[in-house]
Amino acid sequence: MAAVPAVQIENVRKNYGGLRPLRLRALTIQPAERVAIEGLDAGAAEILVSLLTGATLPDEGEVRVYGRATSEIRDETEWIASLDRFGIVSPRAVLLSGATVRQNLAMPFTLSIDPLSDAVSERAERLAEEVGLARAHLDRPVGSAPQDAIVRVHLARAIAIGPSVLVLEHPTVTLGADAVPRLAADVARVAKTRRLAVLAMTENARFAGALGGRRFKLRAATGALDEIRGWRRWFP
Image 1 (cartoon, rainbow, N blue to C red):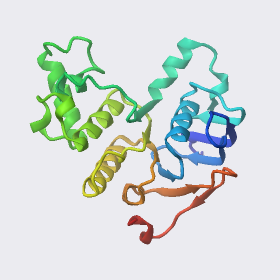
Image 2: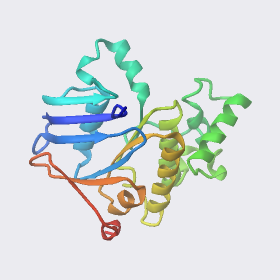
Image 3: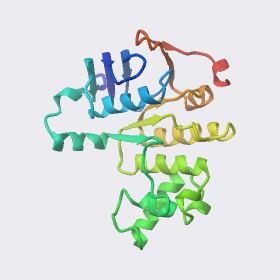
């Protein structure tokens, strides 16, 4: 029996104030599959995240998550529960810049971050290790941490509650070229270990290639997704 796709998008159009509506003709992501899409600017990527999570509904077409259309979510309580399926890595996510990296990692587990209990502190350390975040950064203010560490804090926070779909919204925009393949390798490793479906929206061809899985280029005018094949596109 075939598995129910983690994400299905069919003939979606959404007006959001961009130069043109966001269009996606068809996309299916299976459980534990990794997919990267190039061709979505920051505004389009943000609205796609909202469509996936059901925070907004398409003007046309349908978005289904594990077989259920987002339009079928009945109320706020059910919608909040449905968000647990998603871990979202986004530069729009808020971190407490004056709190330490460790305290920011602990926030999915407790509201009491000063002081942290030993048990919660250990959970934060394990999370940091899982995403490749060096222990040397744990007790420094997150606002003074290097950008590759901050991206990993976002990644760690995204997986902390055990989602089944990991969504990455332009994760490399603040990174230098040398940090990009390392981040892609860490995301791929985490996704494989946790068996996460992954949708990465990125303009960095090197990140998309190193992530593994399928890669597409969006034709914004029509919503068609052209599959990218071959190692040559790994290097911009």
